Image 1 (cartoon, rainbow, N blue to C red):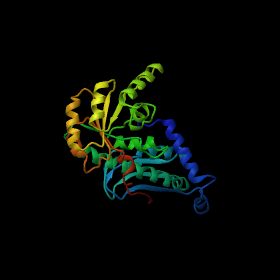
Image 2: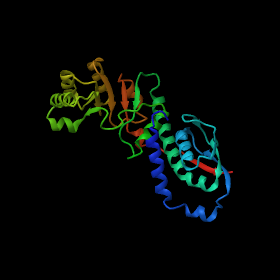
Image 3: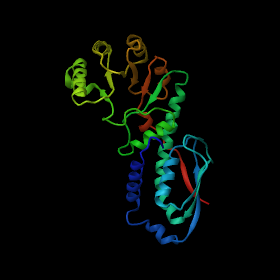
Image 4: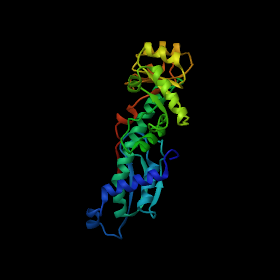
Length: 283
């Protein structure tokens, strides 16, 4: 969990438990004796890449520091139907409190990690990085991006604050690429900010203007077909980093990797995944 801040995770757990429990898990309080103890295991009922084990451990520790947890599979492990990710022993009421939050989190994170791994494997052999985007679930970005990293892809921009990305709306407001870059550089200088700049271009004309104005770190080729992108990469000729973006799928990503781009960004990693089937079973 090196890329998850402890305070952010603790706040997430606190708020998520409050959302679910409020003044009590009344069903368990009514049916399960307070002194009852039991065992449970996380049963895998799917195939893919496991993610969220470390988060699950943090949830257990938050709810009951006396839980005895035996982790059998770590984050990033390939999993198949019938695998056991971990076992836990402790107060039965407390196990039931954690069940839904752990499953919701791990199923989601494992789905993202699995899809991320598929994208990475699809471009194997090419010197290209698969990047995630800001197309994440509000307030869950830190977990979803952690899952992307577990799957082997690369985190790109945590938010609007940590990188400049000049896109079509910004260019249209400024009137031209040249003016957008000029205003951005003036803004960075005035505010004493050291942020890298990605500039989106939509066609050959904008690409030529971007190459002329310079003063950027990366050119993002948005919605270029592979033939046009290959020509653009040749024209850029390593003067700037090159990123491919726009509707790239698992089926098309290898073709884009073959164009010679340095990066491929896709929102699919965090908005088009399928959650993996996991179950917390008493035994």
